[in-house]
Image 1 (cartoon, rainbow, N blue to C red):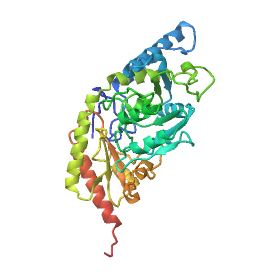
Image 2 (cartoon, rainbow, N blue to C red):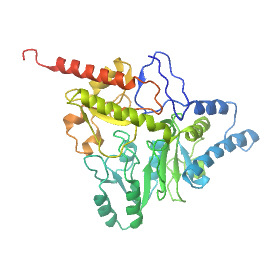
Image 3 (cartoon, rainbow, N blue to C red):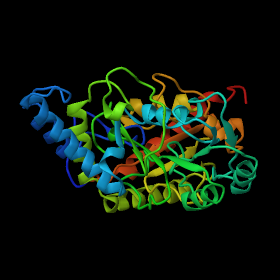
Image 4 (cartoon, rainbow, N blue to C red):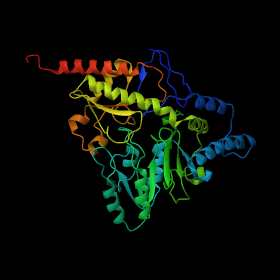
Length: 385
């Protein structure tokens, strides 16, 4: 089935013969503007650290993108540090900070596993941060401390009350770090009061392997990669010039408004699937979520079985996070939310893209879901019953 996906109003190329892609929270297709920017960058040669004219030209183009990112977040250009992605940006923020750190229980693994001495703030059954527990932790601190709270969860799409987190943190003199990977370009947010922001290009329609850490002010962080002195000595290593070019282009063309149709399709899928099967369940449905994300529980059918069956039907979905290659494991996020293990083990994540152009996407998914459900349930029944 031929389909056209769009990012920021631009159509990326898609290999022929591919099916339906509903895994945007894992990665978005490379948008046309990013592709063009990368191709433009291929015309240039030079190391940005070289002082000759070739190096200076590459340096200028990197600094142009740095300025665009800085303007987007209303910070100084010098406070944008390019990294290999959000994982590295998260590690620089948390491991580079000298003081106590608290993270929410539903953070991405790159935050959760960054520091072994972290404290963990619980969440409720919808995956929303426990603000009372956070305030209790803040009250108990005597020295420098950092609160790390993601803007929106990659598995459930749940949007966190960042404004309340910031208010609490500032009341007690704490810094705030935000993994904004899933939120930037998808929902309208104010970044005021957030001291450190982690970004990843490929969630926006940019290339994989490039991201950034944005700092509100000049914050003292210990570099995690040392040696070359690049990125104000905050991140040594030759900059990913082509990746940075694509990153900047994707950010410029990403539009929050383009995700409105994704929200419509998500809501239509949930309501129609619920009407078709009384046994289906949706997680965190009653709290603010990313417009494109839903977590669906197919009782009695494991997540791995569902992912494989949908893949055979040409539909790409996910079971939780997609950053551990080849692994479908029990979700730490759903466990933290208090979701029963039997439900967590039977959940999948569907994440739509913006401006989805194929009108029968929901029809195709629902028909496939019901077929997988009926077939796998029948196969699991005792033949002697």
